[in-house]
Each structure stands twice: as structure tokens, then as C-alpha cells.
Length: 278
Image (cartoon, rainbow, N blue to C red; front, side, top):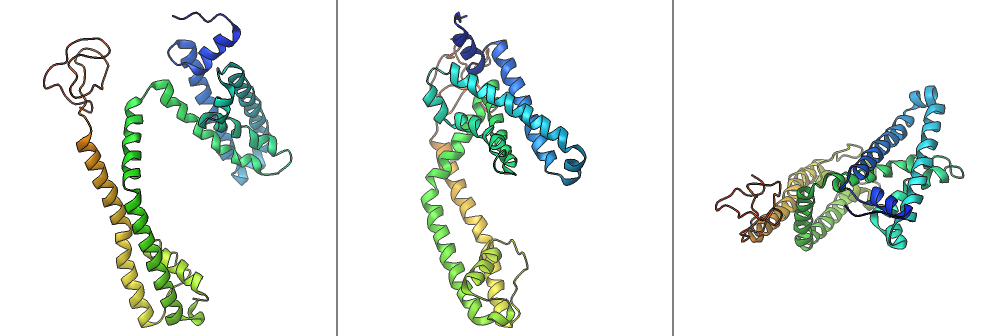
């Protein structure tokens, strides 16, 4: 194993690596502390619990804030590129996970923004090296990006549709039936076409109800069409992706479809081996 001579090198190994017991123990302890701190914020927002144990929650919150502030300072100290870490996704999350409590000294209520700490639990992907989930996330991202233009065109159509129907409902129903303006009528059309149906505004005339019925039926396509577009892109990407093969003798799950030998142990991959998802 690589020698870690200076204090900064040892801290960098424990904080940023994951391949040794101290590094894994640090990440596990950190994830437990993050989960407890988020639970503390959630419980403190319950009025009855805040009245009975508000002092305890406040003490716990300041304990976690000081703990995470020290951890953030250590990360800055041990990072090989401090500016890059501070501006990275996790660097910003680490900063904003402690900033709200310090801000609450000047802005009451800001501490409830601490739920952003839960984003830090994403570090478990690095700890457990669940790369297959990262691959699946990339697969979904590629599908959404590939279908984004089609979805945007469809959403533009939905915006135009709700604007037209909202204007028509304003003319049909009018202020006497709750449709006091065209923007409010467009709000009703959006609520109806998305099948949410709050019920705060509803048509009362036969013509208005007929138009509402047509909009409700159209609303099913709002869910079906984007889903179909993304599903089609997923199928296309899946067909074009190289197949992946499991090694029969070691934990390595993924190889390119034309690979003959395992990239970890070097053993020849058997013909007809199961796919990585098998």
C-alpha cells in the first residue's frame, strides 16, 4: 500500500479515498452523522416536538454544524486542488450543509435549509463502489437528453393548448363563475390537463363542462407522450450499446461485448456467459 508520510497526505487518504478500512470507516461514520443531522432538522420542524425538546434539537444542530464545519475545513486542507474541490458539486454541498446554521444567527428560520445535507449521502456510491447504478443513471440521463427536443416541442404544444383553452373558459364562464382573469383560467387549464384537479375553480355552464371534459381526456396524453418518447430513446440506446459480460471467476461484472479476457483477473471469458445484469 502507498505510504502516506505527512499529516496532509494521511488526511487526504482517509477523507478522499475508499479502498482501506480507515477510509471506509470515515465515510460510514460521516453518512451516519449526515442522516442523524437531517433527522434532527426534520423532527425539530414538528411543533409538538419543538415545544418539548427544542433545546435538545438546538444543541444537536450546533453539534453537527461544528462537526461538519471542521470536516469541511479538513477537506479544504487535505484536498490536492482546493479551488477545484470548493467549486465541485460535493464541495458546494459540503459548504451549504453548514452555512444555513451560521446564517440562522442573523436570519431566523434559515436552519431549515439544512435538509440539503441529505445530498451528501450520495457519497455512499463512492464508498460501496456501486458503479452499476452510476451506469444506469447515465443511461437514463442519455435517454432524457436525446429526447429533450421532442419533449420541449410537446411541452410547447401543451402551453399553447392550455393558453387557448384558458382564454375560451374565461369567455364562456366569466368572473361570475370564478374565472376572474385569463391567467387564472390558464391556471385552471394546467391543473385540469395534468389531472391534478384541485377543485378550487370549476366550470358551471354546460359548454364549459364539455370543454373541461375534452381537456381532461387530452390530459392523459400529457403523461403518455413524454413517457413514450423517453422509452423509445431508451430502447434505441440499449440496442446500440455494446453487450456486457460477467467474468466467471472474479467479482468483475462488466466487460465489453467483444472482450476475450477479464480485465481484472485475466481469465478467458467463457462463450455464452450471462450478461452483466444476469
